[in-house]
Length: 194
Image (cartoon, rainbow, N blue to C red):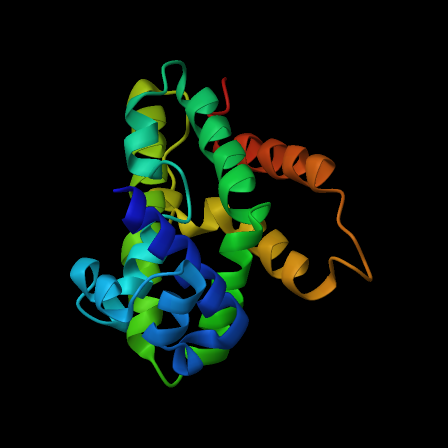
């Protein structure tokens, strides 16, 4: 497993520096200090290597995380959003891959599909579970956000794009922004008591 980790670290560096199209397995092997054939022992092709890099971008899948979060649904939603800011918005590695996807997924649509399956689907599943629990418990009002959990996380995605485009020239106070995001989401989900 140690060798596989070295390959993934090298592959990330190569993809981030050169993009998907220009990245070569030779470059990954050189970056890892191993023979090209060793890369192929672990990964059949460049696409599988890219998929493994994406899968390893965040430390814990959101749908696994939600199962370990005790507490009221509002606390679970808050924890999920906090993890999204920590592991996606603030994660420079994720931003590098998102930049690559924006630049190259038009030519390589399977790249966006890999990111969708590895990162987006588990995240949406986790948020949907938290929302459903809140609605079942009566803490949250009934809402179409259950069908479209993207609405709940959209401000975090905007923050990610902002970081990509404007971090140097127009920095965002991510801590205050995140608090405002959570306040907005929880306020809109909260059941109005009579």
